[in-house]
Image (cartoon, rainbow, N blue to C red; front, side, top):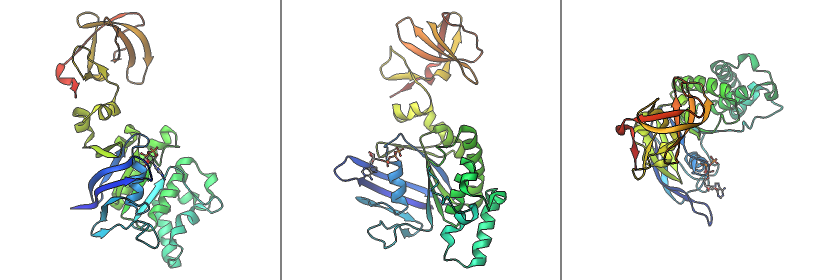
Length: 317
Ligand SMILES: Nc1ncnc2c1ncn2[C@@H]1O[C@H](COP(=O)(O)OP(=O)(O)OP(=O)(O)O)[C@@H](O)[C@H]1O
């Protein structure tokens, strides 16, 4: 049974084009999904609507049986059960780590508060930093404090709005792996908003693509990679080379094999060393420029290279 149910949400900010267009999605309890979309596609607006922090023109959000009310319908907007975490940590700079985590528990019994803070410090590996101030921590640790604070009220749903964007790649990867384990352990339902496909894939194998306010495609990375719904969905995964003799047909660099002779001939214009291959920019005889992957690092600048691929790998729209 779906736990978080988003039904036909429509949202237009005043005098503007629609930010969310007929968006529906059902997420089972404890599932982690990544919501991917370019800037302005409506991701943050959708999260705020789910959290009950933003008005909408029509549609409903349900958490289990409970209908999520908008700020106009509820005296105190938002829900303890649904917590939003942002890119900016919004920590209290003069409060310690444990004080920051315990902030939402201000009205709770002292003993419970202490127990809950200790649990979260341990869960997040922040025990050693409990009396430190936010500025004494790394970016990744500060974000963990913000997530600890969001977890303090034992929410059912965590909405992560590009929470790792200000961290460097290594910090981000480590934090994603760590948090994924924690979220699974807590059986919390998570929507992870990002514009970075790699981050999304590290977090989950359940993707939702959002484009211009609409749900474009959802499913596993494999299914979207193999059958992208449009050019935007396809390009999220890799560059696409245009197969010029066929209308609206493309081939991915990773699906092209390179040979010294026989195949579509071209000349290496540029060579870029990447971790697993050299990326070549090849000018074909018809003047088109293609990106290909030289996995054996065989070809040099100016050299002739011949390209072949399986037609079944071509993507057409
Ligand atoms: N408070 C607001 N008032 C008016 N328009 C807004 C407001 N917030 C967002 N918008 C508009 O709604 C659309 C969706 O914005 P939103 O921030 O939800 O997208 P996003 O996918 O989260 O983008 P980003 O990745 O840049 O944060 C954009 O056209 C944006 O300009």
